[in-house]
Image (tube, rainbow, N blue to C red; front, top):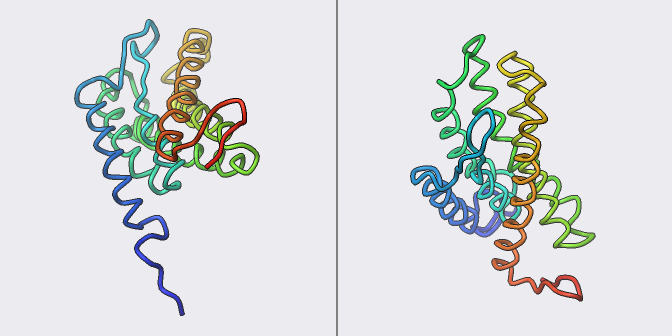
Length: 190
């Protein structure tokens, strides 16, 4: 019978510290408003609030991504619940809260699938996929509940692309620095 050391698993000392640091980053982004910036769309804002969860998922796994993203989920719910007409009590919970929790899990799955091919590709794809999961689930639920119509898609497409590209760039930059990757002509090394 083997016991896990404090350096293994989703609740390792490393992952607890990583979660704490990224939770602090997410809280700063949320409480200062730095995680949101104005854009001319239905929500009037674009966000980088998904990035700490993506970084957490890539570095610590899906549980870390999920824990870190609780800040974004709570913040999103409180920030936008009054901005729309909801058909029932469950609609804003699924649209604004639960949908956000998918970000870290999707990012981790993409990273895990691609990291054996190329680390930089895996990080880029994880960052973009996490951002796209955020938008796809939020808009998907909002459209399914009749809160928004499919007509909003052309208006939000530039924001979706921007957030996916930004998610990819920041994820690569932060994780590469953390892992001390060398990014250059020769690819990457760990």
